[in-house]
Length: 378
Image (spheres, rainbow, N blue to C red):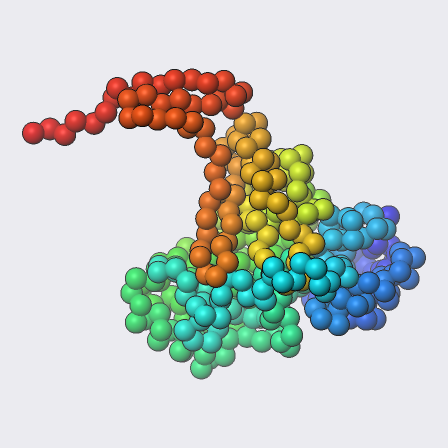
């Protein structure tokens, strides 16, 4: 199946590779779903019900990565096509619109301060494509393109200037790389005037859903404000395309390191083989697999939830068969603002202070005598 040929048969390569054309020609709303359904010969009654609660939009580029006509069972399609399960009742009582209690940790509008030394700035509500597993689905009711105003940014600067222990800022949203360059630079310049802010991170899915946005001009802007780190969000190896690789390399050549934060998603990547391919491909293009998140318990995402034991089982196997640079931290972002909790396979089975028993990756037991203890000099 080739959705590009089905839906955009006459578009030129120049237009296709233009990020502004991609945004202008996103499929969205009822008309977009109907068009998609007609092209595939698929009934979209279920997705149409879902968008009454949660809006949708997707770039032509990202939709072109879908390989199966059964889009809700395609690992790319499942991430972006609305599912009727988003509004089904059975598991909704377990979910929350804001399980991480971000509103509670927002001392001023547009800023989240959960951890002592770092904050999050919500710079925009716009995304190139709306991921159905998003932990901020509650914000989708807002109009697109809301950006931090000059007044709001001054309030944020004042707050951060009064908190010298805050050394790191994550600029998120929405997707900050969709901001006009003048607005993005305005935010970065403002943060650089605060002497205690040492590191800026940008959370973006642009390299995955709209990689043509990563232009030389954007990369030069980022370079001017280093140190900047990019955290992106590849969930499946099919997303690592030639154009995505080029976008990543362009940022790296500008001196911007890139890390990846995947989410464990049922029907997308909840098996060892898929994650193995994903993490190895990421390493090959010099992206550090940083986190694998358990899917947050957000309303509208219950059909993505994977049993915790399944994630642990996959990561145990990953540790046994993959080099350490390919293995991310498996993390649960605890509800009620509990913060991140790492789930690591433990190979230490017993320890009595003098001897420890370990299990190897081959499940052999090895005893280690702890004789080299530290004795302080008198």
